[in-house]
Image 1 (cartoon, rainbow, N blue to C red):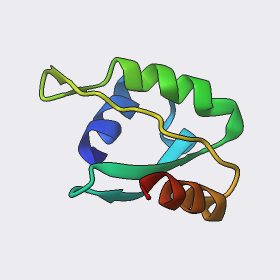
Image 2: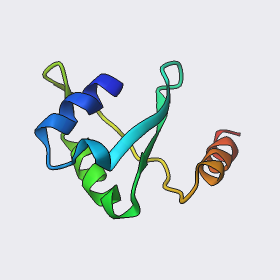
Image 3: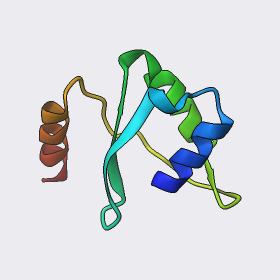
Length: 80
């Protein structure tokens, strides 16, 4: 996922400073991406057309939160 995001950053209107990967777990295939609240829609659009090695990949936004603490809490609750 990190590779796909970094490659796509170079090809889209989303700038490298617009977001960063906070964490990614390859076992659960879930990650946390940090971005400003004004860039959420641009990132959702970017995810719809993202490719990795000429294959489209599906990136689903599970939830959005203002803080990492609240986000992690929501994710823990949704997994139980």
